[in-house]
Image (tube, rainbow, N blue to C red):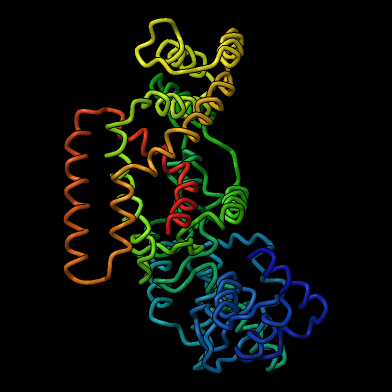
Length: 452
């Protein structure tokens, strides 16, 4: 808003006579859209309303300082009345202004209802010095009558807009009012509002900012301790600006935009937010294949090799502080003398692995894992392809697509899966072998093609 007000100030400094020119709202909106690079007229009207609320532009025939797109004429405020001059008008000045308006029998200078109420309150509050206020108003009226008629009208409208900023219409925001939080920090219990609606006595005859405060009592021990606690709390608060926080958030969002499934559509699409069920179809096929593999693992005599391969894969993903302990656990379970799940490992790989464990790391079992994988690839996987479970599944796909054939294949497949699942309830390593087969599913796809 300061930048926008500065733009208005620069325009009026270059063209001083513009303050006496009446401009429709449409011209002001077009000027803002052109010079402030605004594309939306509604945004230009909003920014214009903020500028009007500060008193730099004002409607000619309305006390409400807002920009309306209805053909209302607006006028730029004279530099003398700008809020940037740090005006703090006193209530006596406002009383003189209202008295001066009542002395001039003109329709355009008639007091509004709220102004008449304010004048009555001020008259009661300043009863002792009302004669002085009235004399000041008379003197200013005499000076104004000597001015040109057009100049007098412009000055009256500018002065009215000035007081509409500092003594706004009830219900409008007072843009010059000090923040209540700042008022509390001043610890001035006698501080009053700048608005004249709460005037009750002579203490408001002076400017609210310059109102003399009474002698405050000394702070107690509890007050000082409370202040110390508050200051310590403030020290722990972060001092990052909101603009920096927003910039960091936007940068992070743009960086991971491609990985956000709510912004970038994944492949395949999420079936919960789209009409594509491809993902469910793939998951169903994967689940069926896992159960087939589980049935086969029950009869496999080299199951410990699969567990070892998966344990090494898990070791590579562990946090660094857990690597050493997990490496020793793998050694004791699969490679140590009398290991409960000993694996068949050649002497060369065994020696390399034992040397690596002197300084355990994520890749200490790399040689042993490669050797075990080659054994499984050359022995376990071909045995799976020759197994009855896999052959029954392949033959079921080759049978004619008749209702009876499909029913027979489905019943046979279901019986094999159910029986295998019941056996696997006693086996705690069912999930491990399935994960391994998923990782090596590429070999299965090639074998399916060869069998077909």
